[in-house]
Image 1 (cartoon, rainbow, N blue to C red):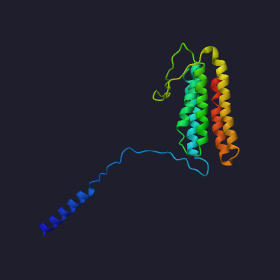
Image 2: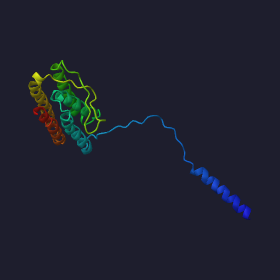
Image 3: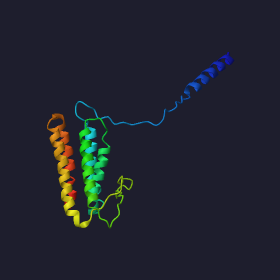
Image 4: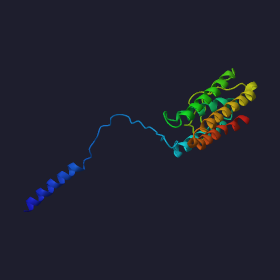
Length: 193
């Protein structure tokens, strides 16, 4: 009888041992993470907050370079990066388009007024060296900086105006576009310093 109980316990433990081994599945490959901004009721509050924070940090990042010759192209690069976080085919397509257009215009302005005596430079954040520009920045020559900054401020005004006008037709966009326009517009402060 004792022998019979031992066999039953051994069989039960063996079954438990097999059942306790985790099943190993093979991964189909790298995972793709996609952010989906819901359609219908315009955008998501969390995504809007992330976008506004990205636009707000652009000013701080560019100011931290400490080099007024880099400000316009730095803003261009930061707006380009902000456009890059906006997924395609979402409620924010127009915002992405405005940011890309504004970035391109600022970049062209910096290049047209490039300081020939200085090299293009990649800039890192003083507080987080891992945060850096995605491309080298073009310095503007000192003699053109005041005029370039005025033109850059007009370009930022244009971007804000486009967003505000396009939001007039859609009530659900008005508040969010107004916040995004204000965040873009706030970067003009950098151009006045």
